Length: 162
Image (cartoon, rainbow, N blue to C red; front, side):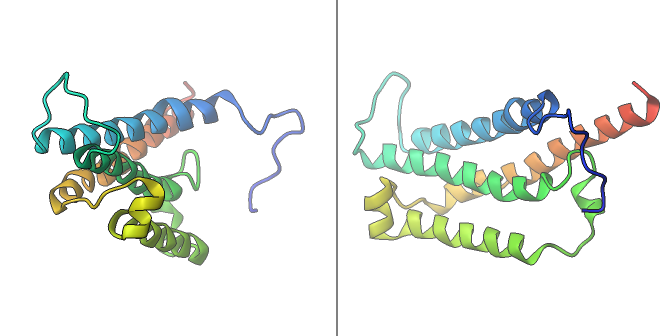
């Protein structure tokens, strides 16, 4: 609200926004999701070339780990996307109460989907072992650091006129 309106001719969706959202952040989220998927499969004794059934417990755990990784990174993403170039840390320590409530709701919903029988049935998920969370959670600070580095490069390019 403190910034001037965008020019009338400027599109709401533009190439820099799409590249950041889909090519950079989306790719990182997809890599984290697939890494979590294969981590759970390999931890359960899966061998490359074996195709577990869609109702196989190991497969359900792997897809749940993929979902958990993506949702976890989306919780970080909401904080990172408050501004396209300013650091998430420069926005102040005070967070928007609605964002905090949304993140808390998302976390509770994820835990209900993963750890309740009705969530497992409704969403085709299976409970995750702690090892999966220990594997997934470090992706969040990594995601944060990579996006902060991208923003720093953009700020440097703007400051140097490149």
